[in-house]
Length: 387
Image 1 (tube, helix red, strand yellow):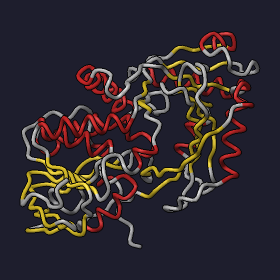
Image 2 (cartoon, one colour; image 1 turned 90 degrees about the vertical axis):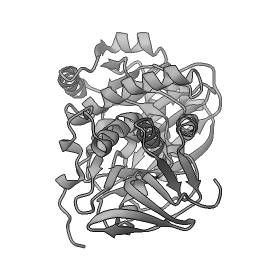
Image 3 (tube, one colour; image 1 turned 135 degrees about the horizontal axis):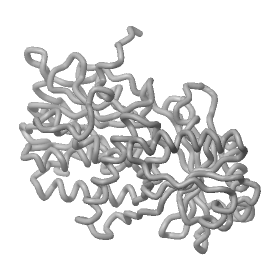
Image 4 (cartoon, one colour; image 1 turned 180 degrees about the horizontal axis):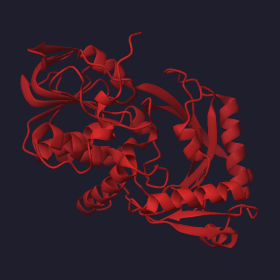
């Protein structure tokens, strides 16, 4: 962070959150000269509001679950290199049903996920309480996902960027992107508040702001912010062993409703606090928390774990997820501007999908075998609709 930018770079990565940091490291590892530009600092946006989830359990069968499985494997490799530096933990996930209808739906989903390589274990009510002793006695069953993991997102971004810097990646933290310069239909440079960087390619990993960044660069990306709330409890003795959430959480992820969506999601941290969510709503970049939504989240969490009814909440916060229209990430070249690549639209899954996304972007940009079929994620799949 020097107050200027390099005169040129092979690739400019816009965004120093989890996806941008992963892209920077992957591109530098492929031998490219990289400059990361961010108007704030590492993990200053969506990543700072994340719970650090690396999930396969909430992914529908098909392209996204295959990208999630690839990413889980890559996170394990990164964690082996990092040691305990970003608190990687294979804690497993538990999805619970409230009635027989939800149990049947979970069973059907798990069977379809298994065809893509997801590991699942069906549990009845007794099995639920064996793995989570404090869970509500009335719950009839659920599915356990041993591949679900967790990490500390700010520590992970710090480690990724440190590793990237060792490979020569330049960090321009505090520089805002103003515009792109093109030549013959291709991106040629990025103008920032710190100066202009000539670039052979640009990766737009600006999260909820990636639609705006794409517009400034002459491209188009239909990403909009989807706000979420999180409650943080006082430190507690170990109570919750896994990431636990209600089965209708998946429905809140994929719904297009403009109404606020809430479901109970509960998990512990190494500090002893519990993170309790979640909500989803389209309200632009409004950071004012909703007491009504926070109350709904707390009530649902206490119904899921009655032991939480008397636990104190220390604080709450909101964050913004980058949502795509069809609920699949937007990864790949811009439909009109050559040399401009997007890595966004992950909604709440960017932390988990970051290394797989970075690997895919690097393969598309630098050449190589993509880890998954890139076609379902291509931004060009969505038609630009005039305002």
